[in-house]
Image (cartoon, rainbow, N blue to C red; front, side, top):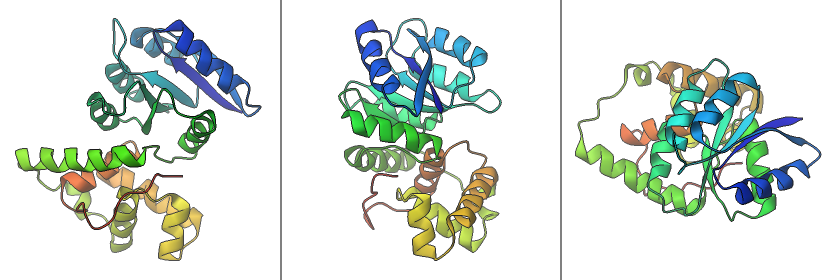
Length: 226
């Protein structure tokens, strides 16, 4: 059973997500919160697997709430909720450690699939936003001198291959298929990549890969993950 927390300051919107999620026999909404501060407190008291987090809320916004929740030991996966996929705050949320984001009018089946993908360790980013994400990262890199982190030099050749495919949005299954390895071996490589780079999520690893120039935009579009 996947344990979920729904965070949104609009009661009607929150109730809609809760009803949809609770209707799935494999998902249980165990707690709700109407702002970021309440969400951080609830995350400490309830062990959940996934948090659906609104960005714009009073007292404490979803970005800072995400940072605080992910600073805890064994934190849940955080999926950001936003009204528009053009919300620039999405980039800050992803860099804060969120595994992806969903627009609030996402079709029900896609929302449920996203929650399951998050639990499996997948990144959930729409195809239109991945293009904008890459452009944003490239522009950021051009504005500052981004030095290659020490952890990048520690990656083996195979781990670099895994990181490149991960940054292009490939799921573990797709990476395993392209590199002709088992999914279990792929998961091990991904775990080692995250550890060596000192990041918490696949999205943060992808951000680092683009910021350092390991992966360049234009070679291939990033497909949606899992």
